[in-house]
Length: 201
Image (cartoon, rainbow, N blue to C red):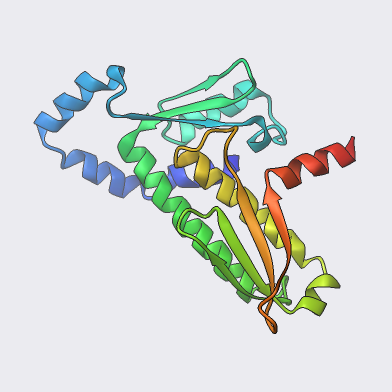
């Protein structure tokens, strides 16, 4: 997920710079006056599950985020969460990039030879509800279910950046039989991750 943030921050830097250069002086003055008041900033809080698997200490993660991702400030909170502070324009840019990335991921799952049982992937506008349309027999005798992890993590990150609280976000993955249209299994995130952690303990 940190890599996702880096990719979002690095995308279209040149175009963003061009847009900033074309901004009228009056708008620049307004932004400089209002930043401290939080009127033009967005704060996004990520739970530890999105970065604790990184083979880096928290200080390194924060430094890299502030240096490479165009984030104004990253704060470590007492509950272990990280709060990213960015301008509204940067937030909008990252949301569009995530939408594009998720759409590309959905297409790749369908066309990839790694998930031969998956025939289609559908999602709602908030990326909180995905449906995998599959050849049921082939799916149940394969490891194609791992595709749900990719979608689950991507959907959760999108929701957090879209304003969801770290305590109140959810992604549902429905597994649908392509022949009958029956949903024969569902996976809910982050519950699935929590169950995996408990089993590992």
